[in-house]
Image 1 (cartoon, rainbow, N blue to C red):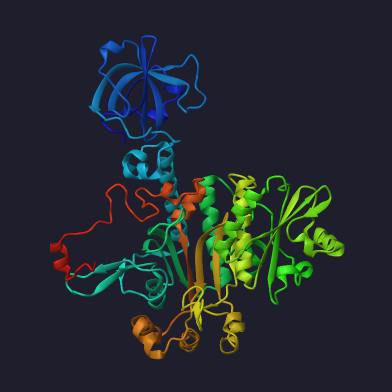
Image 2 (tube, rainbow, N blue to C red):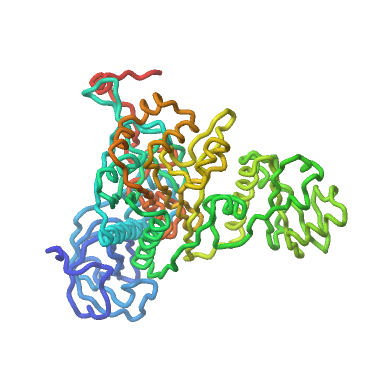
Length: 577
């Protein structure tokens, strides 16, 4: 229903409205005075239309971001503006009412802004006036609508679970909430509804979903926030293949609804170790080549790579020889050190000659073998990463691959690659100490065929675990869950948890497992990250109405802030300096 004060939305006016009187409301986007006329671009939530004051003296003064009500006659433009959806028409004003005046804004309200992000977040209510951000939030809302339609149509029940629960020892650092009633005790804000949704399966709900708020106190980056929204799913009696097929159907519907794209299903399924060996990451962007390959057959045993058990990986960088200066090498090598590598090794192939600091260790036979292995052509560069750690060597080259793909413009915009990463290791060795940690969580189900390895070699045990990757972003992670008490006890044993410790940490949860447990599994999908990808931005804050900055600070209201002694006393708390 239209507002009583508004006959039309600004962005909806078209040729067919010519010669109609309209009443519009909105913000004055820009005001221009030219040749005795005043032009006002009026902006509301639907878009912009041009207004004209043919006798400016008869109208009140209007400046940028004033909120106004305008009445006038629509007419066709003599020279249409193809850049605007309303570019065929303009509105000749008969009256203007200033509803609210505005100070000069700290930055221009436009899609492209050169203002610092913290400045924009400080005035987020102004930042959100930018059409691009409003479009993002509407896209996000459409994604949520599509998600709910899909799960409702597939027999799922949307169920809310608590945000405040018991502190859990697993995962990222939690946000704690002090209890006023139980002084000295704390709730934890839920990192995910993991345990609750498993209890819903034990309760016999069978198909649950929720668009859930989650909280993690972890270091932030462009695609991470301390509070985020997860499309949470759990179901009973489905195999891993059935769950993956179900989720593929969700993405197929969302992509059709939002982008008009028909996704091809089933998605490719890539094993964890294949992804690491080919792309140097378990969330690869496969929209470009530059895959990793093993160079051990040629380079092992040579020079400073003469280390038993070294993993030697390479990537071919087409036409990069002239760009790779000494300064550029130093810059890239600084990145290598973040992954525990001293440096990369670079070979250039120019004028039919292989050059680089490591060439002195190669005889003519080895040079020929390397050229053939890497398929080096004139002007190409071969980058090598080597380490005793397979993971470090792969991660380092994977990071280089992503950096250079962006630098060289190898990624085609508006293209999408969806695939699964499967067969994750169940455990990882603890860094710098004895023992193991769970790759996902301690309730992940190991593959049936790997159960005998729990005693002999836990690092070789693979899990019923799966991640969905879109364009190099992990958008979701899930597993089948353990439903057998004996298997759960074995997993706790590998993790070094005694029966008493397991009872202390997970007792309330484990007790439910003694009353009959359906085989079940699920996944958590990142709504924020999916919205970011489909909106074409690489900054998750662009799709969240009121986000935190990289220091987890709300720049607008300056949260977090200290609280007064009275509040602390009420909670039975004292601040330790």
